[in-house]
Length: 111
Image 1 (tube, rainbow, N blue to C red):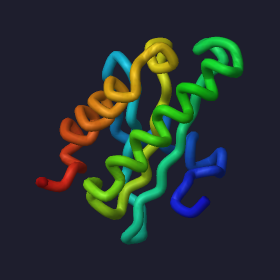
Image 2 (image 1 turned 90 degrees about the vertical axis):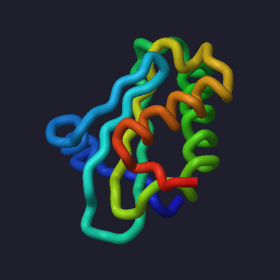
Image 3 (image 1 turned 180 degrees about the vertical axis):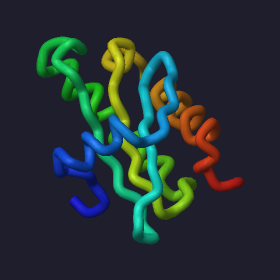
């Protein structure tokens, strides 16, 4: 899948040096990259719950990002971290949380 963060060092860099936006549903780490495209990654800790809950959280975040990716400024790496509420949230709640994160970070294009 193009545009995804897969390397451990990219995730570690995001956790240590990137800016962070926190909402009750998810956390977004973001930093400028050297290209004109966006890359995104998702992490879900085992503290979220069993595998089916972690997979649900990843699916919700992934679909919310695909819905919003045309409205995101180019040239950033974004790492979304699921919180305990994510797996039990509706899709609309995750989309709203993602929009809130992107707005706070000023990464959302004007519609």
